[in-house]
Amino acid sequence: MNTVEGLKYTKNHEWVRVENNIATIGVTDFAQSQLGDVVFVELPEEGQSIHAGDSFSVIESVKAVSDVYAPVSGSIAKVNQELADQPDLVNQQPYDAGWIVTVELTDSHELDELMEAKEYERFVSEGGH
Amino acid sequence: MTAKPTPLYQTHIKYGGRMVEFGGWLLPVQYTGIKEEHYAVRKRAGLFDVSHMGEVAVQGPDALRFLQHLVTNNVGKLVNQQVLYTPMCYLDGGTVDDLLVYKKEDNKYLLVINAANIEKDCRWIKENAIGFDVICENISDQVAQLALQGPLAETILARLTTAPLAELNYYWFWPEIEVAGKKVLLSRTGYTGEAGFELYCQPEEAASLWDDIMTSGAEDGILPTGLGCRDTLRFEAGLPLYGHELSEVISPIEAGLGIFVKFDKGDFNGRQSLYKAKSEGPARKIVGFEMVERGVARAEYPVLLEGRRIGVVTTGSYAPSLDKNLGLALIEAEYANVGQQVDIQVRGKNVAAQIISKPFYRREGK
Image (cartoon, rainbow over all chains, first blue to last red; front, top):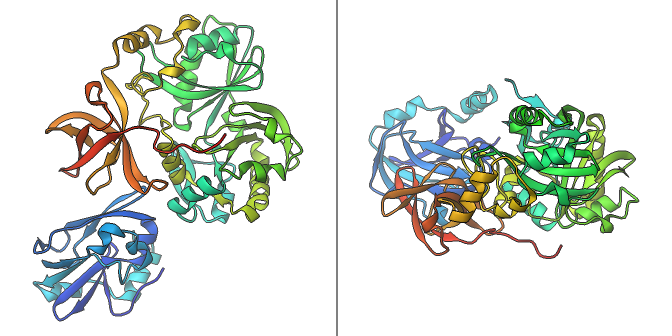
């Protein structure tokens, strides 16, 4: 399992990268490995507001259908349109080209609730899924 | 009920299988990845553990008469060492299971049934055997089964046996030959739409046979293959999966399996209902469809026409060989025409789809 330092992680296996109040959100390497070959990502609309803990996207692998939950609240600035034609970017580059949305944060304190890379690794290795 | 390991459980762990529960058994859904394994079977070869399948030995002076009563296809036309695919129906035409019948010799047959149906089938078989001079025995625990599938299956197997494989035709078997020094029943059958074989062996020899086949196939790029790609492969090939395209409430006529129902062989369970459905035309039919808009259909999703529900998806998936999102659905027969536009309801949203012909994939050659 691969994690990236400096990102924040959720118990639902999403990651968040924050730059200038914009959060980029994707799913972790562990999540993609559990899902298997991703064949479809249902993307939300730009401008849509999302609330921490709610499902805002669905990732489908050959066999599994899995919700993606918002780690933070805010309004969706951009969605990764590349995923429409190349959903397997989620498998290949979960922390880079496989990002799902960027969100303009409404409450940056929500980030404090999330895990650091090491903490998330421990969570997964202890069977947290 | 806790899921049972097959005789190959440790082998799956060794090969990196991701174990899941299926039909009461612990089996690998995948090893390296469903798509990669799917392509291996289409282009080279894959090895499946199908030891979860059930086997029932049927013998006695009335064996043929009994089987003719029990199943819908014509067992009477089988000669020794031949295999037959057949549905097995209730009196109302609903399907108990679909199975293979192996004719070993006169009065001696082997039935191969679906794992999840073993108990139900055995009950049904025993009930129906009353009044026939026949012994039906569930020998599932005494048999392990491997499926070697793909265009290079014969090349790989030929290195392990002196038997003249080229002489074994599709849906024929040898009751006992040696493969890698182990006695197996070998048939040219499968559930992938590819060329290939199924090998029935002693449970205690299964792991060794598996390793021998994997070693033989290494130079050909064989992969261990799991349940995930078994499903995508059979789905592309238009092969029904019990519980999806066939069930207690889906008859073989509705499933488009009418050629496996032989009305001219005499009476059998479900004959009257099935004959009515066949002659009047069934009210519902299994069709193939392709997603026109983006989305993946899944089993149980509603099929709509102008907002009205006309059926239900029985299997839906990404189809790796075609790189498309496809499905099978049971819909009202009057709309079961190629080109018909429908909607699939995906998480509350209507997504456009179109009826297409099936099977979606057909292999070239024998």
